[in-house]
Image (cartoon, rainbow, N blue to C red; front, side, top):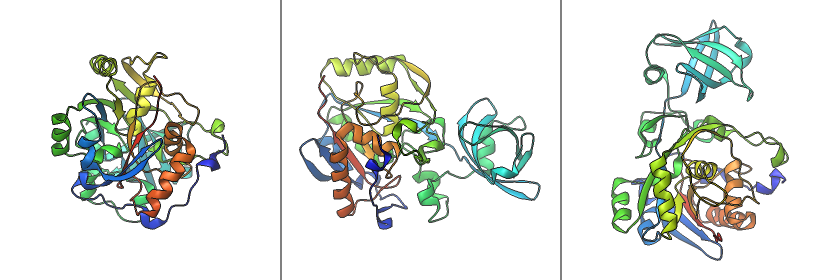
Amino acid sequence: MRVDLFDFDLPSGNIALRPVRPRDSARMLVVASDSMCDRHVHDLPDLIRPGDCLIFNDTKVIPAQLEGRRGDARIGATLHKRTGLRQWQAFIRNAKRVRAGDRIDFGEGVSALAGDRTQDGGVTLDFEGDEPVEILLERVGTMPLPPYIASKRQTDAQDREDYQTMFAREQGAVAAPTAALHFTPDLIKRLQAAGTIIETLTLHVGAGTFLPVKADDTNDHQMHAEWGRIDATVAARLNIVRANGGRIIPVGTTSLRLLESAVREDGTLCPFEGDTRIFITPGYRFRAIDGLITNFHLPRSTLFMLVSALMGAERMQAAYAHAISEGYRFYSYGDASLLLPDIAR
């Protein structure tokens, strides 16, 4: 499928550089197959049926953006996937100045040895010393804001709080599951009081989620791998939700992708632990989910392809055109959408 079918023009003024406060006051476009309406995230208890289940990603963003030196050369590193106890794959700025065996000094006593090149053009970094890498990153790292924010302003202390969801527990992500940034403890209490079931899974979001699709055809795109886990007890409870007629609605494309990686052909969800490279484009048959809460995504991105697969490409182009004209805020710190397709079971 041609990648340019998923293109659209987005005015720079629609790109959110900070989240709204309170978080659940963000706008939310509700899109069904035959209707569209403007609401807010705090309206969700009126939109989700009793017995439905919202599934959140409990991954925690680590300060994975590093600045260091190899000799006189300045080296920037963005960690994106753990491959060992002290080993991470990283995208490197000024990568031509780094060779296998080079030591990169990130300051504050933090250093790493460069290893082999990875398939995606990055470099493997082996951190020296005995302290857990997470402690080293807290010392020298900064939050890895997406390029479309980092190119417009400096990362600051406020981002340590803003770029983390209320569910963040399992350290390992280098990008936030941003749809869940809109949720507050009060909203969760209101949802549960209205009969909504809340579950969590873990998918460590990688920096590859921001990589553009450079191919002209979706068949030629190499999807990045991300590690995820769905516990057996969670899978069992989700199967009970479905058996009781409830809808399974992931909050974020990360939760959706992991659920669709763990589902059988008959729709039964199974425990899962490992990497997923699932790439969802129009024509895909969804088996695990019945809807999606998500932010507004980049043009020509794998995530816009995913929502187009869920709702139809023409429907999502119309929804995004409406959102742009109505001043919705896009991307990680932007507004939300609730997508409710007609899926035959």
